[in-house]
Length: 183
Image (cartoon, rainbow, N blue to C red; front, side, top):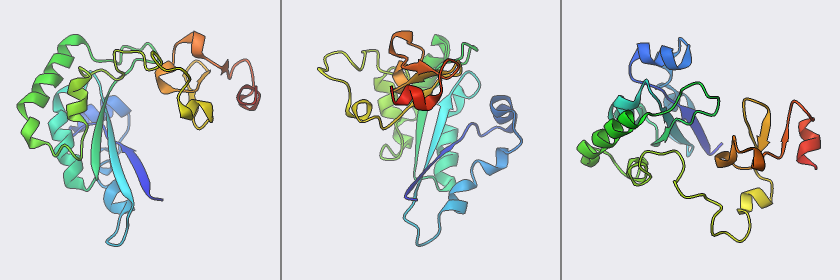
């Protein structure tokens, strides 16, 4: 392997349990040392979905991840694909913006995406439709290099499409994946 991505959730055990319903709080920050050694070239990245539970500890999560040996940390604003209320309300987005701005000089910007997050106004996707102004679909869609499944069985070729029924290429509850993929 040359790359591993690990989900991290919180620096606070009670919040970690609320997000994951799991008991592995202590293990989330020990993974880089289990994957890497002194001669290893593997990159171990951390990914943290910002949600209504951990939105106010972005800098603490960043520091804990870097201290634990992660090579970088990206923050991803929650998208409520399942309609469960897991998203960032406007009031929380404002808090995330202020927290980033207050600590902007305390981040190594070669190891995190917080500046880009500010530029996207703490949104998961750009406000502009990624397909607008493009004559043809992106290369990864054209070569079929990725597929995304929604909780409702919908099959999509690109993550920003999830939930848009006009871009769903099939549904696992109606057809087998192999039939959808080869159609």
